[in-house]
Image (cartoon, rainbow, N blue to C red; front, side):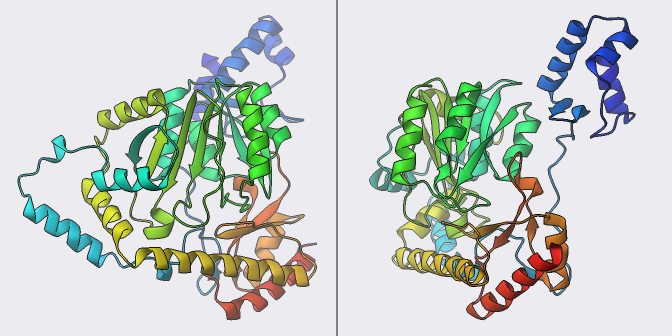
Length: 419
């Protein structure tokens, strides 16, 4: 183990390098095959190596700082960025003015003694979200997911994740030394067979996106949620993390909470109110939220009360409901327009909700290059996938009506060109 770790750290064994077989290692080291197998198992738990079907044991990619932002060539239409349409976000001026005036009216207010959750935010949540539990605030939905994983799991634990799914989830699992177990996703969310396989296979936690699943746009239906809840009830020790990153946009999806002892539900405001408003409201069981709060106090201490105040001001502003409803309609119309245009050209894509669609393809690289030749930047599916079939993600949140038909033509041409 120490020898392999040294070679990985020094760079003598690069990411992806294949290790000799267990028997070959045992012979060269003068050890029994069972001893070598145990050493490799520990290295897998530490995230140093991974085992791949038909490829044996290979050196794992380092956790590192995460993937860089994808490159978009000058002049290309950016369909890589999975974020909201900036023109559909509310003006922050009024909310920031309210926050500034409140701070000016109470200059002696001590933020160290303030409640961790802004009182107006808590009141807003309790009035609109019936899910009981302990409430907290994190710096966005993904921050909540990472904190929940770190608070409830140990190095080497298995986690059921959607496949295809959100790449930063896979990255943070690797950084925490956790093992991803792929769960197949259709338009209604994780399939019951996939969830059952994950929890029966030892998953200590599962992460589910109730709507606008990235990248497929899957959205839980009542029937699917009922089937998934029935499975989770038979595994009450599983940690359920429900990541509603779209938050205020779109109809509220069914929840899987109430089926396990440890659980967390996140609801972000960033997609609806502004990506730089790093605020998510979080509710969960006392033990999970308490552990997360302890880690928050040991680090940054709290989520900025100024940001929370701005969010509270926006949520209470008279024009916000109409603005959110208009944004929701625009996103649905743009997504559906491209799905319909592709269907007219004989292409079947997925996108039941959210800001993007997922197009199954044979060769992601060839398709992306063919799209680049036509002036469009789309996201290859490889970073999103574990065991699922190839595809590309195409963001629809900023599409204008006049762009839909030319884009659909370009996609149809690129599919033919890519083979």
